[in-house]
Image 1 (cartoon, rainbow, N blue to C red):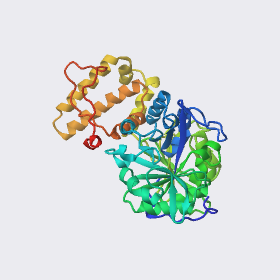
Image 2: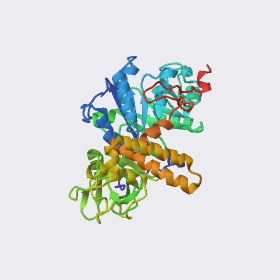
Image 3: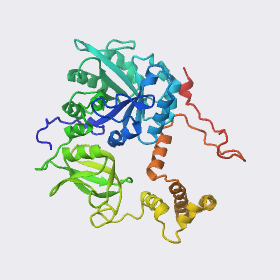
Image 4: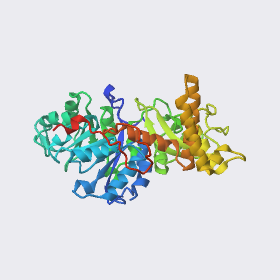
Length: 456
């Protein structure tokens, strides 16, 4: 797998960067350019099933970028944030809009350097801001950029570094120039905590070149027109010290519990991304689609590459009798203690409850479930020692998870909701609701805007 690839020596600063971040544009709540050549689906929720496998996406709001207020785009972006981490771009020219989407869980907001004076970002946490600049040409040693108060990237860096921690480099009507990228990288390396992203390279080898330098590649147009694929981008950076070129691939479930060890190559990774299922390379049988004959299928949720790019981790949702050929969940033995195992058992009880199942009784009696959950919360607060606290917490978790399972909500959805809450910038005071308050009533617990955001 690695024999024909150029060897770009990776720097230490490159160890924690993503290889590629897929991007797409939205208009009217639909994917722009669907079917141009890459055969992208028009439904964003369908698209992120494959794009999201590499962990994060960039969503460009074309309507907001043109000054239009698209409720369809806003609704769709909010739905996408329920599924996976998203960097949002397009129309971010006011303090309020930036705060609104950071509070909704956007991992990054991309602000155009040419869009406006960046002063509206005063008070916004800079670690959540990406500043996008468009390269218009080269003048001697200077990189020319559009917009803003500076014509050269070097002159613009002070303002960019003041308001953001990521610089996104675009090239206007010209191919990606590696000498320009290296000049920009030198400027970025001079700012502590700053990262460089480059958009829309032409070839997989460009991805490998950037990855070796710790520069993340954002792919938009190449994915839309089919000139480059995510599989090709990943394949360009993977290396193997094995004679057969295979890449060791650790397979884990949603809780990152190890299920087993497999091997991958370019073909299997391409098929896995195409089908969004667990596909590997068997050393004896060749291409192996897990569960194709046994029924123990895998939904592929994420692919992670290790820091040296010589191994991978597939995060899957396992179905059927389990991953192991011994008809158990894991090749390393059964998992009985994780929260994920509990949630999966409870969800299974909705349709496969044995006779006399207490969990099934809770599903059928909402009043009982509510009463037990409140009761266990009271007992937890009354617990006096560590052992008792742990015991009562386990009961609260069980009944809370039963409430989730009753509505078909899995642990991944709960974890994603927690992740979105953690990304809020404007925090609520967290005061207790007044006596008589009930769900649906207006909340008196309004968010608090950080002091720095109001200081202009």
